[in-house]
Amino acid sequence: MNTKYNINDTIKEKILEKLKSSKGKSVSGELLANELSVSRAAIWKQVHVLIGEGYMIESSTNSGYKLMGSPDKLTPGEIKAGLKTEFIGKNIQYFKETESTNIIASEIAKTVEEGTIVIAESQTGGRGRLGRKWISPEGGIWFSVILKPKMQPLFASRITLLAGVSVAKTIRTYGIPAKIKWPNDVLINGKKVCGILTEIGAEMDAIDYLVVGIGIDANVDTGYFPDEIRDTSTSLKKELGTEINRVEFVQKLLMELETVYLNFQKGGFAPILEEWRNLSATIGEWVKITTGTRTIYGEAIGVDTEGALIIETGEGQLEKILAGNCEHLRKP
Image 1 (tube, helix red, strand yellow):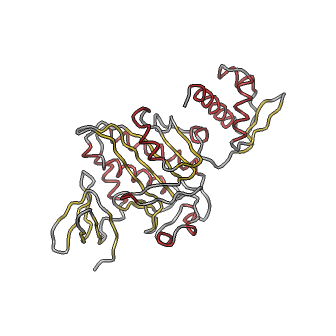
Image 2: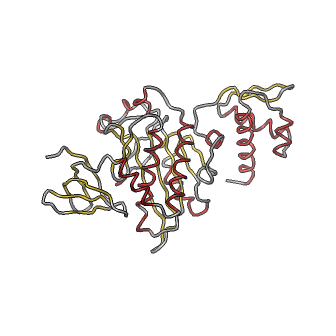
Image 3: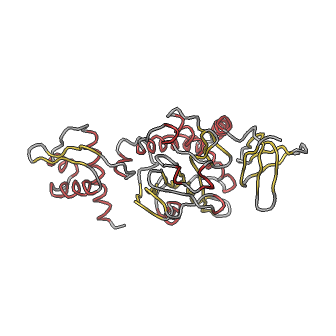
């Protein structure tokens, strides 16, 4: 990405922010040019870029530019307009379609600032845990955030729990009883609406970066999902009976994620873990845990400070599982 693109991108975002904040009133091109220290021709050019992206902007020689309507796109300009975070989402890389936002985020993680986001309208090769494919059509929310916590790799799983709390709490602001299935799914009435995939770049004793991939079935029609996941999946649109404003949802989620993450950075993991436990769909359930080497059946009775699931087996033994596939079963 060259410097010229960055400058133009910034101008475009600031124009959009000004048009949005004017709430339907016209903004003169001269005022925009003066405020941004560019020529009126540069303003005109970026306004037409916005029109090409689907924004309805009325132009008048006398009064200037007026925003009449916005596309349903998760573009940087849309997300940043009104975003109240300190650092998460200040740098956004947007794609109409990409293979996987986690792949791109992992490639750029070392060279960008913490809080950078990679977001796409759709993914052709979205990935879940254990190498599973993640269906990522248009209408969903598919993004990855780059974090650089100063902590040992041993505790990286805490970030997955933290992200799950952030997503569940955001969904609950819409009146939907979201819960978290260990280790990385968010459920609504037992059906999956969100998956989280955390990938790590680390040295022996320090994390270089974490890429937290979050995929949410927002305005997705689950009727088009493959048979094997259709009955166990849901979407926010399906639960609410209407489409949500995706930009507003992303803004809320980024704010919640940053708040929880900053509290975590101050050493406050205990309250976050307590929230996770209160939102858990897994604690108290009879579960089947599959790891790379064995299968464990038992009752999930808690999660420890490392994010490990604590299982009480039928023989009364306690097992701690840090990573594995979890299935909720009917109690025997």
